[in-house]
Length: 303
Image (cartoon, rainbow, N blue to C red; front, top):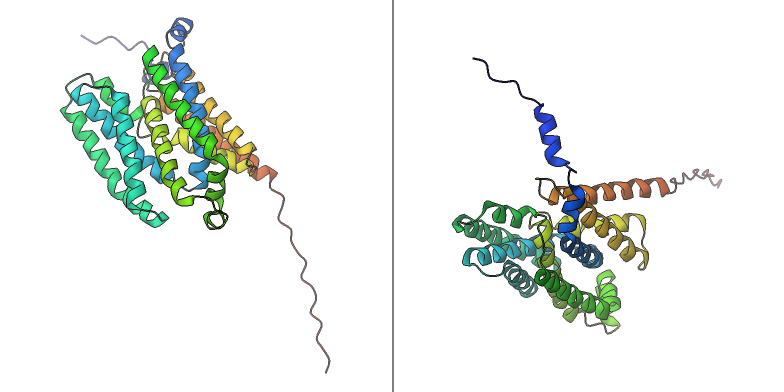
């Protein structure tokens, strides 16, 4: 007896899993807190990303995210607040990176040592956790979940702390990021600003891990700012573009992921990467053509 033929091709089934907008309006009403949280993360990620790119710290973001993941996994294992565990892991990573290295080479070495250690701890804690598999997967790749009011309030408080800290030290931090030696000569407390910014970065990473996951946090904290710097070098335009790109990637990715069985992170990273590619194209189109100078004739001197 022959089995029944499939009613749809495998490709069509996969497409339905990626884009399924049935009952979209009802689902949208259930995740309004998640959209607010995504907007907060886009705002903070876009602003912090300006300094991450200026100070050449994308590797540090990844390192902090791995220890933030380890803290969240440990909190999940022992049954405490996952956001608190992620926050503790991020702050601990920021402090360790600030203590273990001051120069760029020392920073990279410290991050390269601690990053796999944090990832290994996180995997161990998840292996010991006996709860839902979705909770494990969400820590790595993110998930669109219903953010309740207490979680939204905690994200809003953390966002306010990060925003106030950035506003207070924006000009000296930007000066120190562009030319640390000249800034130090002008009296800017360069040595103090570096660890303070690492703590602010730790808070931003801990917030981002909850939505986009530990493995793909760079798409929110680095890619929008990198895209903005491709088309502008203005200290006023770049932050605005970075925030706009981060908000588009974050909220747009969440809206695309709504109702899908696929995690949110592929949508956020795809939108963010598409914006970056578009900015590269715009930068190439706007680049003036290289001037070809005609060689001047060499006149031999007659002795």
